[in-house]
Image 1 (cartoon, helix red, strand yellow):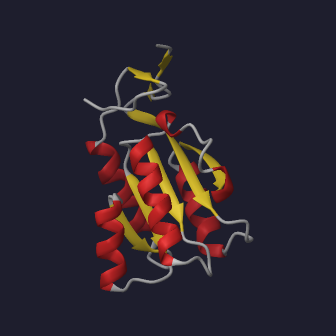
Image 2 (image 1 turned 45 degrees about the horizontal axis):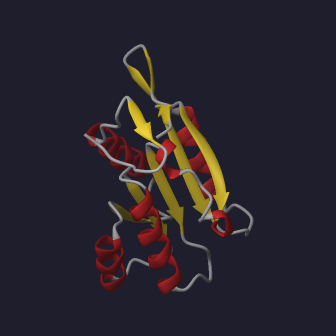
Length: 151
């Protein structure tokens, strides 16, 4: 079994966090660009991925995973992505969506998302939610490449 040192580093009283952001190939909307800038301003290392790379993304190395719903993405495809990510990682999983119907939120949470928020939500509110999720996330000092787990 190969062990990989965790990417989490402590800088003063702040924690260095790695985030994977999954999105479609469409251009960034202004809200997504502001959220990405906000995460980087908080010192979060951010890797952007396309949905087509879902099967090869090393989710075990991330402390936060964000899935952004593409403009015309069907609900079943998004739910499949949530389930796939959840089987590969226990890290907090946040879904940014353009629709906030109660049925959609319930389905997303049951599929494994920790938080489902509107992409048009206030950036400060989203960052507060994400920081709250990260406070509860306790990644291990060493993590296995093949088996994600948490203490």
